[in-house]
Structure formats: structure tokens, C-alpha cells
Length: 238
Image (cartoon, rainbow, N blue to C red; front, side, top):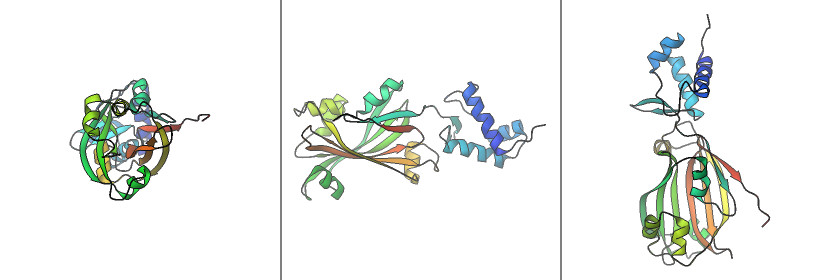
């Protein structure tokens, strides 16, 4: 008779997912049901489920249950032209960006520095959340000079594309000037927003987009789920 431990429970559930016995979005049996299946205590079952949640294989939703993660790990390429939809849609996912809030504010220090603005300059802060197959993968804010880009948020929501919105201001092309990425533990509100296990870290991406001559257009700070995305850096000859 096999003596199950939380490690063997984890391995068997991983095999269930790999073999297709458990599919993306499937709800797992309850902890008592799994404890009975493996003839082991609920504490060990809970430990195995939490380990899989930290790996991004399961989603534990308070009050609803435990589900097989419905989203495959995505690859996001950072290069000279970094575009959200161009990155994610070819991977077979439905991408949706939702505006959470927009405000006209005095530029924070890091924004004024990035956009080469005076300390008292006003910027438009657009807070958005990005969903892939209805699952949150990122959220954060982008900043544009309010004087240079009046009504940017309104135009962006009508057109559904940052690239198309820039064209309404006579800007036909733009480039990624700078990107920095670092990881850190997720804060409680971030885990809640991303619907991920509290122990799963996040990736903080700071970026500046600019005209071909280097004049900055916007900067952003976005929090990504480390369990749902892998960043790759694209090299160019330029």
C-alpha cells in the first residue's frame, strides 16, 4: 500500500493536470474528498494544494473552491517596439484592458523625471487592469503629460489602442526607450487584484516610451503576476 505524503499528493495532482484528467478551469474535489482519496490528513492535502497554488498551477478562491489554473504561462517580449496585444493575442488568449480610474494630478517625482517635466506639471494618470482569458495578469498606471495629450484617456477608450491614440496626435510610431524589471513579494491587495496565492511573487515593470528621437511620451509602472508571465528581452542591431 502506497503511503501518501503531501509531496506525493502534489505529484499525483500534477500528473492529473498533465494527462488531461484535470483540465484548465476544472474545480478540484474538496479537501475532505481529497483526504479520503489519498487516505491522508487534511493538513497534508492543504499543504499540497498551497504548493501547487504557489507554482501557479492552481487557483484557490475563497468561498468558491480550488481550480486548475485556466491560463497557460504567457511570454511577453520586451524589445524596440513593445505592444501588449501584439505580444499576447498570437498566443491564443483573449486580451482585454479595462480602465479602472483616471485622474489629472501633479506629476509624481519619478514621472516628472522620466518625462522631463517641471515638478509642478500636470499629468494624466490612467490606472488599468489587463485580463487574459478573463483572468487578471497585470495592473498598473501609465502617465502622459496633460498639456501635450489632452483627452488621452477618452480617446484611448474609444479607439482601444495606444498606438492608434498616438496617431490622433500626429505620432505615427514610438519606441520603448527603457524598461526595468524586478521581483518582490506580493502585497495583500496585489494578490487580491491578481487573484493569485499570497505567496506568489509579482514582477514590477517600469517603462518609458519615446519618439524615435528619444523624446519621452509616457511612463508606466505595472505589476505582473510572476506565475502567469515570462519576460524575454529581444535584441536588435540598433
